[in-house]
Image 1 (spheres, rainbow, N blue to C red):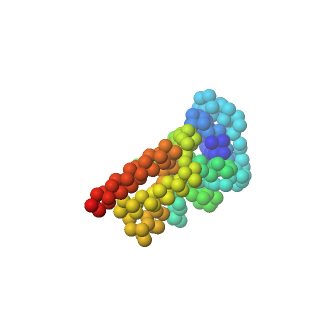
Image 2 (image 1 turned 45 degrees about the vertical axis):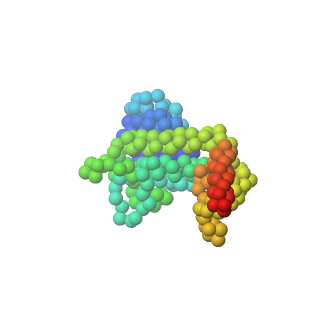
Image 3 (image 1 turned 90 degrees about the horizontal axis):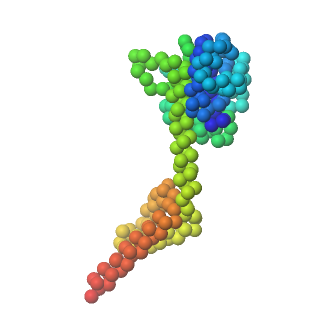
Length: 246
């Protein structure tokens, strides 16, 4: 989260800067950069921050966009206007996931343009992708602080989900490679013995089953359950075969 930077370009209303700082702080974002703000610092800005004064105090002020994003490995521009050149367009959720993924390896930035005109084409030229908030096509203009709040919320939510999944994975004893390979061998034998697959055509089927189990990341208990089911199926198939032989 500390590697995610929100960049405001030529913000004309000081109150919007304060409101942005408040929106960011409620979602645990700390990096605020301002490019040529019209009125900063100011009493109105501080008042609208409502306690997020620390973000304002440490906000970086730059003269150029290039300076603001010089160390960024990924830059995404937020814009509602349609462009003549085709862009990779991301939803707020997709934007959040992309920023978080890249932020694991370095600084990333999300750009917000002027209140009246947004980002210029030359500023978009500095971006890897374009982010859009779905809205009423007949009235799609959002206040910059409102737009920031939406993106900040999606980032915070995505981060919580990643943290939750990480804790869940760490809490389970994920089966190791040896245990998985042993189960795959058992599975390969079982599907032949119970008559589910032709011995000459199991390679492709086993490849698909491998992908299935690798995606699922089963733990040791789950592996044991699967192998128990396979053993029971093999035993029943053997009994049926013996009975049919008499």
